[in-house]
Image (cartoon, rainbow, N blue to C red; front, side, top):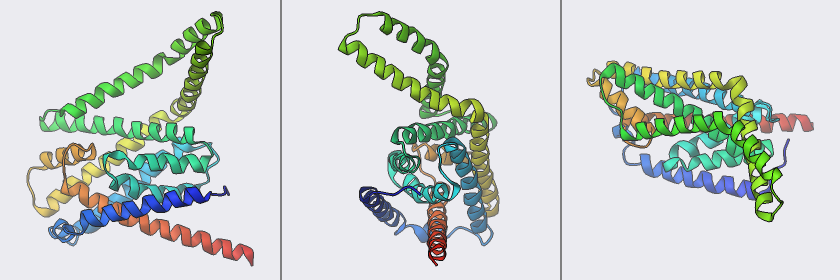
Length: 289
């Protein structure tokens, strides 16, 4: 088991306290209004949706991190610890905490950043595909942010495909030129970029399609739950509710359905985290006897 530093523990405590403060401030006034329209059946539907979605998202992230010496127990505890932070802290700033924690767990902050970014990229691609399908079937138009993300995703994909050629060309050029401090720094930066590429390529080539499918299934479950909940509540305007939900997931809109999903996600992951920590402590106590 990796020994955690005092600084790591203090950062964890600080971030979690900030997250809890934001969470209670966000839901303190509107909790009853948010859930008052739910039926006896719809609450279990939300709970099952949250559990299923996080099962697929956790499986995706585990596959991304697989091969870096992270056991399943440490992975699950970390997942349940960082998930409330990532869904509560606005502007996706909680993802930095996810990168930091997983980087600490696998012993490389660079790998933590790269692999978590890859995980988020796969999730974003699946979200874009989901939005496009919803737009096609509902006859709606894609938002500007969706178009921007689609262009960005295509750009990243093109860079990924063309990087090996770029790397070979520039490496050959820098090695042929007279050695200077600037050229040596450029060569080192190029080699670091290649290390990042190889890390990403090692995951994508063997698991890329599986990661994408896991992301797509998770979004399909969320969209399906909205359709089911809309029917249970007797609401109309399903296409608008789904569009609002997906746009809210991108930070472009607000959605009560997403707020309910986030609330239950935080509650579920905290309960699981506490249970996993308790099991770990109990196992440790038995081992000492």
